[in-house]
Length: 136
Image (spheres, helix red, strand yellow):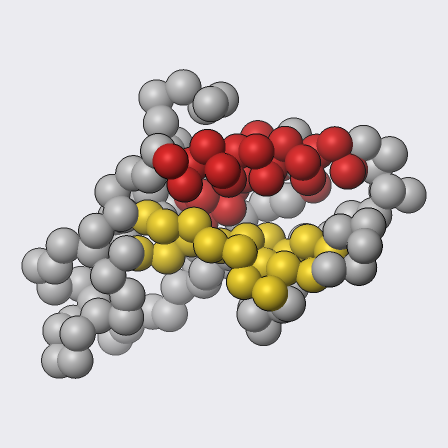
C-alpha cells in the first residue's frame, strides 16, 4: 500500500494584509504521465516559491501574531532573506530530503521560529539540512 505523505508550507500575512504561501517543490513536478513517484527519475532542484493566498493545506501548529511574539516581523523578514538566499543556492530534490518539508523547517529555523512548530504527521524530510552550515 502507498502511504500519503504530508507537504509542509508556511503561510504569511504581512502588515499590509497581503497573504502568501512559502513552499518548495521539485523542479520537475508533476511527474510525466505514467511515471511512478518512487521510480528512477531525476526530480531536478528543490525550488522555492511564493504563491499568493493560502494554498489550502491543513494547518499544523499555531497561528503566530505580534502579540504571540513581538519579534515576529523581524523573524519573518529573516525567513524572506533566507528564501532569497536559497533561490540563488538551490539544492537537489530528494524524496526523503532535502525536499519541500526540509525547506519549510529550514526557513522556520532561519527566522528563529522553529520552537513554535513540530513536524506535521507523515512529513518526510523535516529537519533534513539543506546545506552543511545551517545558516546562510
